[in-house]
Amino acid sequence: VGERDTWKSQVSDLNTTLQSKEVELASVRAKQQAEAQSLQTILEEREAELDSLREQQKDLGTSLEARDRELDSLRARYEADSTDLGQTLQAREIEFAALRAKHDQLATMVTGKDTEVSTLQDEHSEMLRS
Image 1 (cartoon, rainbow, N blue to C red):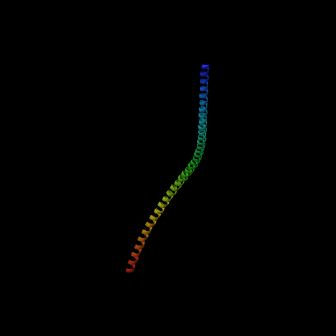
Image 2 (image 1 turned 30 degrees about the horizontal axis):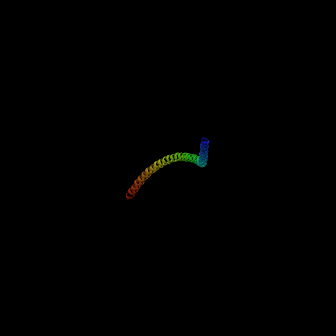
Image 3 (image 1 turned 60 degrees about the vertical axis):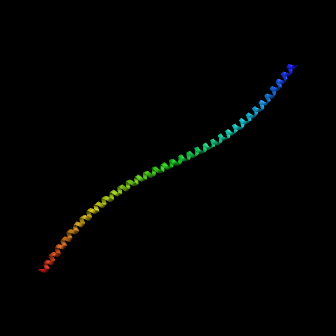
């Protein structure tokens, strides 16, 4: 009977310990479940942020491509305008050189005529005096 009571007491202690451990286990499981849910929520938030950042990156890429095309167009226009201006400047320089030559020719002719007029006036004055 004494041994039986000891066994009963040990079984009762083990049952109490088991129940206590089951309560602890349930508490740990509840904490783990809450932590897992919290981590799941954080993960979903991070995925949403990542999706948003990817969309922003895509938009920026599209904007960058548009700016690159605009820059290429401006470069092409600049090069064409620069070429046109260079050709126009060269043509103006040729025109200017031709006008300078014509001016010099006319200046020479005027000087020659001035000399002729002066000579004629001198001759006329001589004739009048004689």
